[in-house]
Length: 335
Image (cartoon, rainbow, N blue to C red; front, side):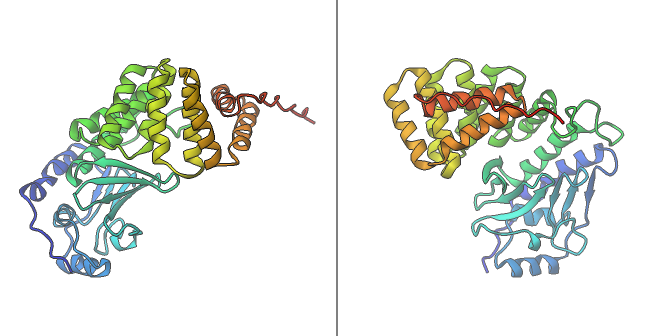
């Protein structure tokens, strides 16, 4: 078994800021477990076949896991009282340690360099969520506490009318609070860009997406949102470059859709050669692409989603420029 490196001074003291933040919050928002027993740490390391990263091991010396904001995020521990058992988390990446999971299904891992990555299993998304464990933890607390009032309940007007999505102005505040703690977290820059775009602030949104691509160049989704925003601003050439980067990073049918977005940007930029090449690439990647876009158009029409309808129509026109758009399906009268 690899011997663990000695904890750095930062590793040994980073949780002081965490303790201070917990002390300021209403009782019950964060549940902490007493320190892990050395025997429990040793058993976990034996089960995993490796030493725990020094920052996470240092955390376990103070807290054997943590329940953050009513299970919004569970930081795993190694003892019987941990809110989530580390050994029960799927360790499907040999060079990383999954150590936490969110209520949304996202999982968080530490890599060999100490950085924290967020995984969205549903979308196969991997994003740089923290430059190290300490900053990730403090930024998570800073971000999530925005949603709560002094009574420990959700603050008013933080969710949309459906009660599921955080409203853009609150999401923006969350991202900016997190970035004050960890300005190198690409995921928070991406979240900030999305909030700004929803608020109609497209120029600063583009800057936020561009920063995310600089910090996490291998994640296709900041590139994609950079391209969409550039397209909305009429900057088709910049959009084309961004979509090309996104498509190069993503495989399968999703990559084909990204190439289709590039085709649309190339057409709007007047670059016929690029449009033809990306059109061919998109169709080669996914022979069912046109059928999927037609289905998306029909679904948008059935749900009266005008934005989705315009988007699907524009992609269809770009990928199959000689084909007329399918007419709307007649809705059957109610019985």
